[in-house]
Length: 330
Image (cartoon, rainbow, N blue to C red; front, top):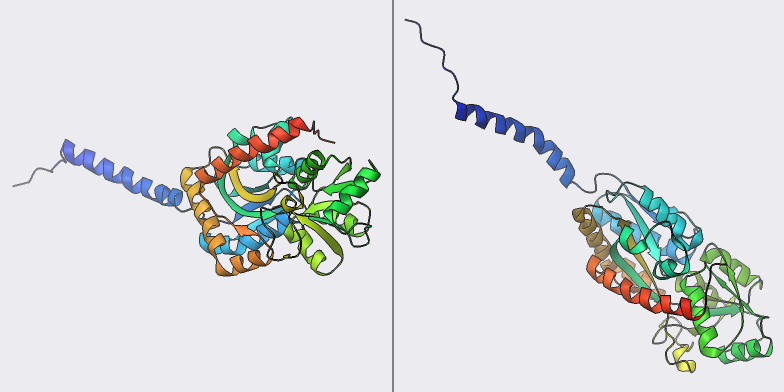
């Protein structure tokens, strides 16, 4: 007696098909959920050796430890961050290419005709740090105080010039704010980064520069540059004898330079959140905090939403100054 071959039921066939499909899909899902699975690239808009570059390189090892992948820094200076932003926007929106942008982000949309919309096309990940600037002049300058510089500028209109790391940066806007508040006339000399600006200041080729602490503090402490004032709401712990511009008679003068991370629009939210957490971990790292404190820099490490809200206020404030002072790209 021969038994009849058994045939799977319709229900069994459907179940087997679903199991096969699920098994085929699982490896893809696993790959999609593992971020990052390779090195992460951070593009810095300014030259190597400047403040933004140094800050990015200070944060990178701690971010790498948090992500479990190398964080590679690349410099792409030019047009106050625009060239670097374009490079990031040209990369896939997968979380593997970040922009480490700075203060000019908040004014570029007003100051320049951009080939992209910084608010819509770049997604805030996390604000990394805040730092006041230091108004520095050559050690041999004929003035030793902020008031002395202002008196000299008024007695020699148009003779003094000031360096910046590019039009629309904190150094530029701080000098323009001082121009408006103090009623002085001086000439803007833009550079492609803080390092070349400092080099020419040391050589006496420019009269003044609102340096960030990373690029300027060491030269002040070594006596190679003279600090006349700082731009925060209170004196820097690293320069306790240097007054703020506020306490020198300009009560509304406060300029805080910031650095933060962005990714292209369309980057998966899971990747944005993972990167934001890595920045937060880096800014809470004990060694990083100690090194930042020594430079008078405040670690932040906020959420994407908090960073977005902060940026909205910056855009309003500095966009208004650009329009009021008729600031243009030179």
